[in-house]
Each structure stands twice: as C-alpha cells, then as structure tokens.
Image 1 (cartoon, protein in one colour):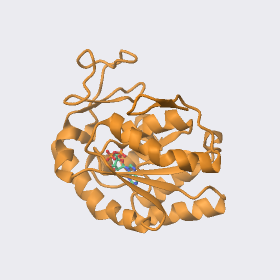
Image 2: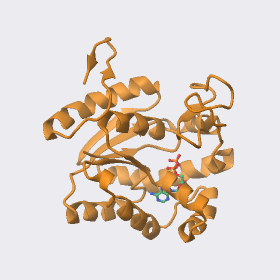
Image 3: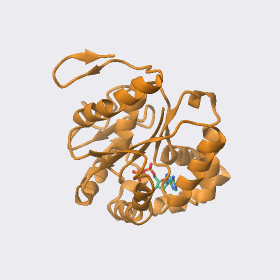
Length: 236
Ligand code: ADP
C-alpha cells in the first residue's frame, strides 16, 4: 500500500505515521527527517537545506524529488510505504505521479489530518522528540514519565530547531500557501479527511477503520500487532 499522509505542521502526522507503519509493516518516509539527517551529516544537500528549514520555507523541489526517488528504490519499499511530508507542492505531486506510473507502483491512498490552524502553534512549541527512537511527546498532552527523558530508551528529549514560535508561524503560512493546493490536486483520488483535533488513539482507530477494507482488498501484508478497538475487541 502506498499512503500519503497530509496535515499542517503539528497536526500529528509523525505520531500517526509511526503507529500506521508499525501496524502495516511498511516504512514511514519523512522527507523532514531525511533532510535533518542530511544536515547532521554535513552533506551538500544538508548545507543547501539548513537555512531554508531554519526559516520555515520549503527546500527546492528538484533536491527533494531526487532524494525521494532514490529512497523509494531501497528494498524496504517493495511492499509499499508511507510518505509523511511529501509531496508538499503541486510540482512534487506531479513528480510523484510520474514516478508511480514509471515504476508501476500502486495508486496512493491519501489521508488528510485536518486541524484548525489556531491550535497548531501551542502544539508545536510544546513538542519534544527523542533523537534516538524518534518518538514524539507533547508536554501538555503526552508528557514523558520523567521530565525530559524518553520513556522507551532514556535518551534526553530534544526541541526541534524550527519549533520556535516565529518559525512555526512561517511553516504554517507556507503550508497554507503551497501545500493546501496539493490537497485539491488529490480530491478525486482515494482521499480521506480525518479530524486531527482528537486524541492520537482515537485518530488511529479511525485510520485503521478506513484502511482495513483497502488492505484486505489488495491483500497487502500487515506486519504489525492487532489493533484494540474502541469496544474492546481486537482484530488482526
Ligand atoms: P512539519 O510537517 O512539522 O513542518 P517536517 O519534518 O515534515 O515538519 O519538515 C520540516 C522542514 O523540512 C519543512 O519546514 C521544510 O523546510 C523541509 N521539508 C520537509 N519536507 C519537504 C518537502 N517535501 N519539500 C520541501 N521541503 C520539505
């Protein structure tokens, strides 16, 4: 299954993509994480991306498209993948469409996590992430058990550089201007809008409810654990 996860910065894409990929057994590919890794490694791409990301703008389509096309060639993508944060412009969406037809990949399923824009700044400035396992916390709604420490591996949690209030506002503006039109581009596909202003568990229930029939229909493997339903029953 090829999944595209959309939503403004702070809509909970990262949290849901971790849950979905564990459930479906496909990799989650976040272009933001890939770009941060490039910055960390000091590569030419990282150097080109760093100041753009620090200011809340978008890295150039050519660079991101090439990076994504290479990543999708890796063997872990053979049975499908989830894209988090890509495509972010109509040009990227067109590039992805070409790639999908050239490589004869499955037609994508689009999930749109919709959150009112005025809720986002508070969510992002209270976000913390484990640099080791990438788990995301929120100091207001999902704090770690010990302050500043990841529950899973004890690593000290970090604040993303671009989660300061002024950069967050710019990222939201960029989303509105450049990424919202991508949603219109996908309207006539397998497109599902989900209200993202509810608890992560509830949202995941809704997502599994949407994807379950599609997964069963095309027979894609589901590698992860069973999902606990709201009524207490479990399904595999
Ligand atoms: P968020 O969705 O919370 O803004 P991401 O980790 O997805 O965070 O992205 C962080 C930054 O990385 C973006 O603000 C942008 O500068 C850059 N970036 C990520 N994905 C793309 C993309 N597909 N095209 C261009 N820039 C991107």
